[in-house]
Length: 273
Length: 269
Image 1 (cartoon, one colour):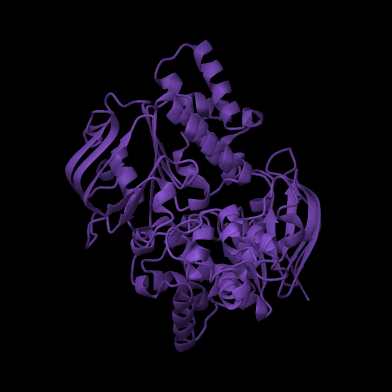
Image 2 (cartoon, chains in turn brown, blue; image 1 turned 45 degrees about the vertical axis):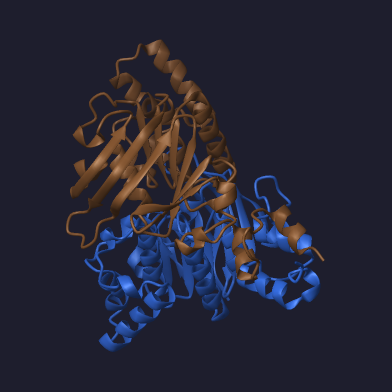
């Protein structure tokens, strides 16, 4: 089942000369991690904003084509989607409620708005903070957190609702090594729970083992699609202006033909004297 | 020559101390990665260096100036800063005007300012967006614009908070190359980063902050791969396993080694 479906979607930001998405079609299935990548400006971030309904509701602009997130057109408002779609942006500061005095209250904000009983909220908040490795931050003021701590808290504040559709835009940019591996493991376990996970990221080294499918965007739509293990070894991803893993990039710069090595151990096998 | 000096610096936003008696020096031409877990005080340290905060105890001396009574603008001629969220530093209507703000504040002549802006935009691959509005650009491109603004006046000290976050490989490589070139000219670079590949390519020394103190001050080569929190990034790991020692672990350097050494096996079928 497709939790997210786009069919022939074109989207243009207000005042922009060219559309950010052009005749864009793809789907994301429950139980899978779908990874969107592409050169800067290829449209992956915009695809997430459109999927969440923030474009055009918040950004303005013109959209055409069909979008279905959990069976609803997200442009028609959040009715019915409350708590079921989680959008994680790369600037976590923009996603705080602004009224919570502690991290625990911040994470409890959405469940409280949905009218959950206090005992359920308390247990769910503890569990979510624990899973993101930030239980120790519960009594802190959100404004006192570092960028990376904030990113983890924002993700915990969505995790608490057990969303059916995750939309994440470069969520690891502020995270340390531990935070990145934690997030990748979390995405796998959310997919295993049955959620659809859609993540836009340039981090091929981190994502290729975590994703089930990769969609390579160019000029506003996916132009290459497949299993990361195949797509990343090939030439099409480079032709689309995106990049592969570090070792594949080294292989390409050194004249190694496709299929190229992806990991350090494959590189050592290829190049060892 | 010392470009940044922290002497027994303590600082906290509330009662708790974020930095607790930190002392360190960064010299001309040095490239220092400021590392540590989320919440270790890395961004706070950069804010103190730029006089955006002032120490509760101890002293901060930025390019010879004690920051005690200084405002951030008093350091504009000697230190360039890239904010963790560049959105908070961009305000002009075009990229060119944004990057030209620093030279204008320093009253550079028009021709000199324009040349410096063009030069830095082209170094960072931003020439094609010079007339765009910064807010019409993707977030990672805005970060490059913030970096251009930090670099444009050629300050002797660069303090950069996550310069490569969200950038694609080509841009990260470009940023590393630009910083290496500046360092060769004597510029000191202090960069908060979680991008260990970038750190290994552009910087040499690692300062590890833990719990508001300097836990390690160590050559990056001795840190990466020898500490559970700092695994060797792919190119560092690969160069070690292939026996390339003392080389900069970048795609450009390694590919030239791999293609110029027939015995490395690149000729195998």
